[in-house]
Length: 89
Length: 439
Image: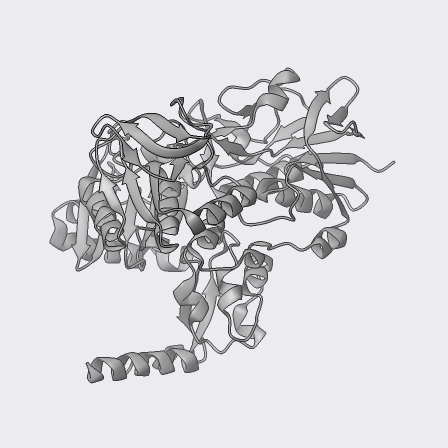
């Protein structure tokens, strides 16, 4: 149980450091769940509609929006900076 | 003189059309007429308002400042009549709006079955924000609710009411959930999740009459029980395009307003887009309706550009929708129909596509892993449809493979050889065709 928790925690921290949130606008129905749950108050929905990258908004990659989007419109991707070494350990 | 555009309908098709017009015609005079006294809101988001996941304020995705920025005039009013000769739209309050180009993006409305008692207080649909407010208000005091209908909306109603603590009963006319689109295993997965949420399922039940007392619902008379007591009946049997305005003006209509692939109607100065547009696909010679948010936006974009003088044609993509059904993230892409007839829907429901029910010369292969489920509908030389439930890693590349009709002949034998091989073969196909990048 505790090992599983540590593993999840490690994955989360890795995502926060090396990941970025990427949107697929065709899946978005503008429900606002992402914007409502963003702890930083970033209007993610508006950025998705305008085609603006979420990574340049001050996003911490906490994953709240990715986890809560009911339409799977948001996902994590490894930032290009980290791509070469990602997942090596 | 600036060209005058009047758009009837303040939804995704209407607003996207206005944006497209503004891009191509900076001096245009653009007016949007909406029937609801609310700013633009997310209709699919109503389901999440009902469950309590988001507050009402989260639904309003386009503030009035967006309209000002785009130079759009928003009028709240109901279109009453189109005077085609004079190029004028008349509203019910008497306002007369002259136009050079008119767009009908009036959407669709929830229908009610012809069952006696449907007019009683406590019989509800989830068609608009006002409807959803009424649902929430009723759920505060209701003890027991019944839900009838099918597709995604019926589940959203059942889950939303259960989340609000109402004892919820989902009555299906068929022997399983959404049998025309989902296979028996998929229906069972959804049904099991609904039962986990405390929703009680009743199969092969038909409502004969809604019984009222002092104008309010108190029970249902069904074919299985003489009376089923309830304070609420939520109905989701489908939607119907709002064709009346066009029909009365002599614009050609069928189930929806008939358009060509440029969204032009039988009147060259009148366009239609979104749920109301029944577009002719020149290639197949068939007309079809869609009730999907992203499709409505794409319709609006192309229709708006064409109204401003472009000559773009809509290419019907493999329709897809992703949503949580029974708490399981589910993506439906392309032709996934099971060939069974519709039992719980009278017409197309919201978030639905006629194309999902198409029966092509193909057969299904299933690849399950743990709680994750995937069904591929494989044709002679391409994948024609897919259902992905749970893990969504394959859903984006599958969208690409289906939409772009990617040739699969070289890997087809492996794809159809058995459940163990499907995921591996699909991964190879995706890697070789670059579908991860393309999706």
